[in-house]
Image (cartoon, rainbow, N blue to C red; front, side, top):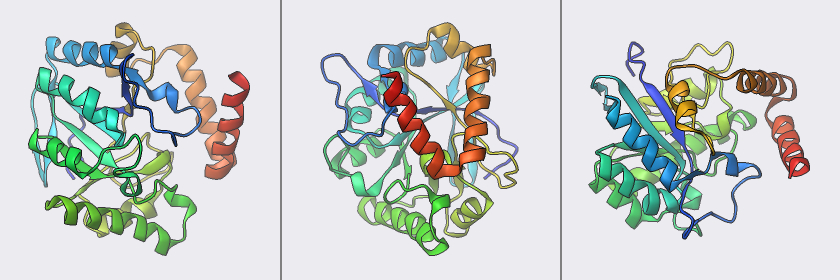
Length: 260
């Protein structure tokens, strides 16, 4: 990976229309904050194009770079990515990365091999999002390696292409995880947000959230974060540091249920 290359990287999950929500039944508690309406996604892709941004992709170790580069990424491999996001991407000439959870391929609400192959034919990039979506830092070294190795090999065998991009599941990682992934053959690694003290090279992303106005979307691309969001982000970082992975996810689920 070229550490000098620092594009804006946007992270999406589900793209939903009012008539066809296509929400997988096993989505985690609170996942709805990352679901974007098809109309909002269309407006965001149009805004990027109208404001001079252009798609950026890695081609093995060579960087394909355009003016004002933006990388579009999708985690989990939900069917709505194919049904709702792909037509919008094609409409505006955007290319994107789709990171796939192997054990969910073809299950209810998730893309199957047919859809993944059609994404490739449209010029999209397929990458790994783990074998089972487990938090890698919670696993034994051998289990962590299996998550990374088996997911890569499964995609390569079924799609007939090299798989060298990875999105770390659930946002928890450390240098051991990142360096293991590189050793196993991944060349580009995406994370949610760089944790304090991480030394390994990887790409952080901006998590696009439900209900963002175009003003908020523009602010995100310019690195401007509203005060309330900054307070919330600092709180989340503190909770992650204090409670670690399992404790943080447990508390998050409790708080979301109370708010509901």
